[in-house]
Image (cartoon, rainbow, N blue to C red; front, side, top):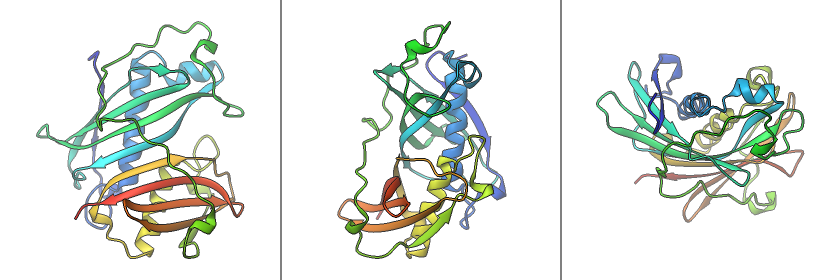
Length: 250
């Protein structure tokens, strides 16, 4: 095992692609999370171990810079690493390589350990019998940690919601709530309906605010800002679910 990073390779299936025959960004996010699972395991704090203690990993926010998306039938590799915990927060970095060894995407994310029942944050010292977390390289792919985004009041948006999504069966994961990668799919649906050019998106910053459970409705709002497009989801009229800022290449 490489002590500096963990590594997972993926093959792009046709069902993973958008209309442009390239990997859908929400599938890429899912692949990054698969690599995060391996990374945590390689560091001695994998899912099986922390679940046995009654805890789980929860991602709070993630920022992805897209240079290009891999194409159908292409193989790509994700390298990921973590320096460990600072107070309650764990960093996790990503680099995505094509088969020629070129970096085609990179990202950063922030995680917490949480109680499996109520998802309240927990300090690492709460894990009984845990070996020390094995830190990997100290390198920030974007030069900064993923920034927090403010979730504005719905009145901030000039127009009504672009569309509504629901916690339907196929959106739910093993935790019985909408998987966070689905929020990115919802964001792309909203941008598509709003007439945005999706192939020009080069940066996605998403903050996860609250869970969406079975049957819950999420209204999605969009607003153009000077530094990108703000996309937010709300349930129960004004309860923030996610906030996302996207930028587009010229």
